Length: 175
Image 1: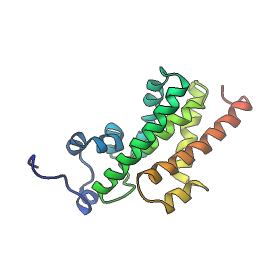
Image 2: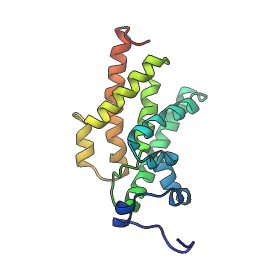
Image 3: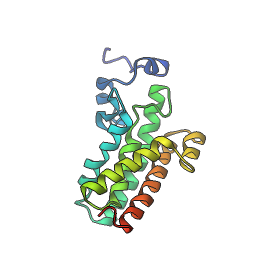
């Protein structure tokens, strides 16, 4: 592709999928694909969720109020990026769009005991709710269009995972 040609859109992306080279040239795709995790040939959502761990760790240097602000900014910018990339790919919730899993998993970790068992439970519960999409998760997934709704269903799955992690922590099953 020459420098003057625009990246393929619509059905061309559905046919060929997003490409690493185009992602590097498009800041919104770079974020929406969680810096390449969404390009994984198998289980891109799982890889995107794994990206939540380094994001969580990177934000730990900030005080709580700054972390809250950072998450809100990352959700807002991520909504824009996911929406734009969805337009590029011709599919509002293309499987490669994994920023929603990354940000949601990082938020789950904020409420999870820092331990191997805590993190395994948090990851497994988040992926369970993200894939299963119980009420109210499926409402955002089915009813909404655009980047914010792509992220919203994962935030709702994160809330369910957080509730389960809290219950496991209170019962002493994880600490």
